[in-house]
Image 1 (cartoon, each protein chain N blue to C red):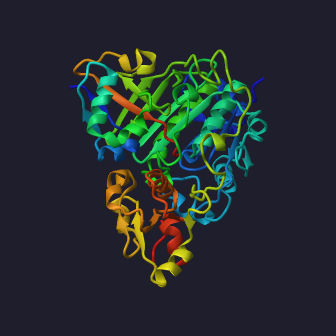
Image 2: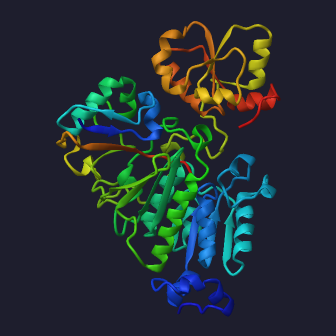
Image 3: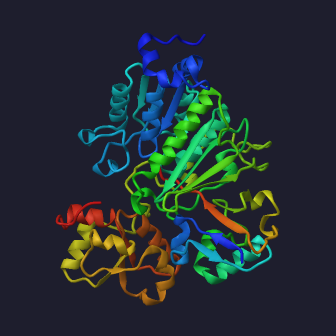
Length: 384
Length: 90
């Protein structure tokens, strides 16, 4: 039995009730339905806002981060007054302000193989709005194993992807990408930047697909990958097929339970702090400052992109962007001590791997990057 | 000549190029021609045996070459190849 709509709800959703594909029964379906949104960041923000406004009766939010100033350029569910607060609390308050008639459950915890099944169990549709590969593979496998749709979106600078991975009807995420890239190959938004509106476009597409699924209407993105380019303003799609060798949704699956994805993806841990260097290869900002002060000969290599030098720079550092480092190895002397740095330590960790595999041994990674330098050594530098 | 379109996340390995004109009668030959132009890209795109790495897909006119004849998929002079890597930003 679908729930009835109150007089207030009939007025609130009148523009939906006028569409024959939704109508009164469709709106009652939405009221009875539930959606779990993994991540309340760039993608999760528009998804959560539109699902709440549309009257999805029960929304779950998973995140363990706090709202930061640098989130507000794109994570529109959060306001300036919520900086420093838990993202799930901030988002929950905003959703209930938007639509007090719905229920919003907040999970302030990392989404892991230990808790994912329990959290996701009551929800009809799962929306992948995460910012990392381990959680994307976890979300996919969870959806395959439980028969739920994984409404997928991912973004990079000006480009986005969206699909619905629903193994009952089509391919899953692993059919398309059996393995994640090695850490550092594809930089995160924190390192590479992202156009603030981009997650709005992709997240709105995810919300559309979720609503269509819950209503059972239209042609979904199952079996298709949408490719959006904001700079060229193009929407294209490519066809996806089930991979007969897929390790999780194929006829002979190797994965029959959720596994430890952090090792699998080569990610050191759950911490968002961006350092992936093994202990011993890091140098802190304070240690580096002391050594430079006492006159140690250290070659500082800044592996950020040239346009980032306009934001902040360390005097005396040479700029060799990560993508060009391999081609400039001949200019570096392995006998000389080298310290690599970037914005927050991820790209320089990748640079360290490149130098190590080329035989360099007197090389270190500035832990926390130039942002750590700005916090601990030169407070005149801006954080970004 | 066929064109390989390069998405933003991979452009740093190809001097920022958005597309590369290539020669070759198959998808594999076209990729080899691209890698001859940008050798630093090879370890990111291919395994040691020359196969595509599993986090990158190559689409020919909307179809994944893995669903066609793989790197042996024949190519016409006007064909467009799209490289689609996995991205994680959210």
